[in-house]
Picture (cartoon, one colour):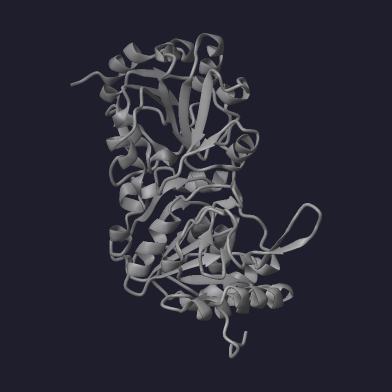
Length: 445
């Protein structure tokens, strides 16, 4: 019988010892969310003055990232993110983070075929008796990155939930170069925000489209989670989970007896996720729960996978929509806010599903720091990054209603979108549509 613990002990290092393998010019990967290697990052930051041009990738990290905070010149460490968290957005605004465009289902293939990873470092659960470390909330992309790395360093985080998997949810000690241990702070918590009247209205417009036995994907951001919590209060039953990111809304659905996964057409009886973050109760729920499995995003987000799930309901958030139906979910003008993520993956897959529907949601307006209102439905974009093209726009929802843009002409789209815009902005949007030659005199909103 193999003595995996002896192999573990032979590979055990202090964080300071482990990061000695990193050289100037290396590409280093921190993977994603709670895979962020807190202790190794601090140890690497201490080597600042002896290293130059170490390029680091990560995404959805909560920080603080010590190699970034301690090197404002970016001469020693150069950080890049695939998808900005709120913390990484602040780094971006300070000129301390660059964005890497991607579609989440393709992220691991990018590494597999095109990218270099000299050293991958990430947090994992403790090793089990079979020699495996669980990749926990980073399962969606972690294994593919670790497989590409020349050197793999694992950091054991005592707080991570162990999430059962379909595949690629773990890594064996034999695949690892070094292991480090230490004390970590509790995992960050992300409770659901109290719903606003607009949130409740948006959820009310979506609920009639959802039937018993539907499977839900709730995207990144507060609004999809709020909508999910409102669904938990409905009369719907036997709902399923198939999602890139799982958060507290699914726990609310479970507690309400709505989430059974029993009517899914694939992975029946299992709630499928790629990543996860929420509250302490949520982490306890997904920990070693046979009803929840983590899988790589090459499977979870693949449109061909999603299309196999009957009555797939995808609900994602956006920042703005223009009158042509182009959807921006990741930038405000040219300021990067988040990332493409899996929105286009699920928009495509849900549209292919038998009985499936894809919803992009937004409040009709936002307020700036001076308290001025601005419409989220705009005449046309001025540098905003298009996340979902107009050719794939499906249901758009605000507190004023839900419209289906599928197959509609440009003038029909303008009419529909103006009908769900805030009333204060409708006349100026009509004037803009006329100027853009996408308005008919017979239109009524």
